[in-house]
Length: 146
Image 1: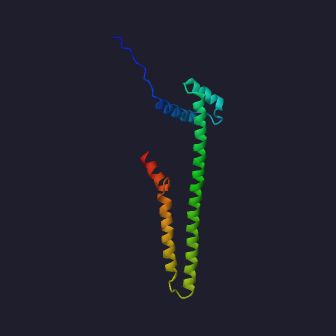
Image 2 (image 1 turned 90 degrees about the vertical axis):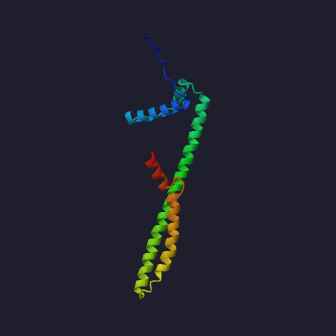
Image 3 (image 1 turned 90 degrees about the horizontal axis):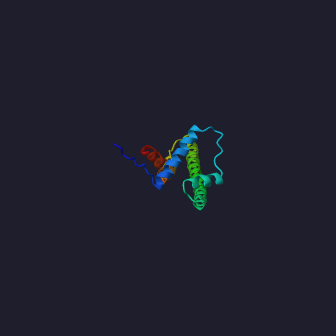
């Protein structure tokens, strides 16, 4: 019984995903001396699989823009995080100092008003920090899903 086997064909989006995964797996096996590809080498590889040089140029341009945007967003997230942590540290220091002043002056416990109001503002800021888009909570949830 001679059955011809038809070779499996991969769609364009599958090809991209497979090549990307293979490149990442190859990076795990390769030595650390890998210097990457030049644009000409990249264009040659793309040409081998039927992708035009113009498409490669556009893809490189889009990737540069994406990386630039990602880096800018990362810097923004770090600045927000640092601003929140500074705010929390200042809150702790000031409330501690007010507690000490209150205790030394006879303990009228008035510092609770400042601590409660300021603490509520800090809690709202913490909630915004944790639940914003691409925030720590969203990233943790996505990590659990994948």
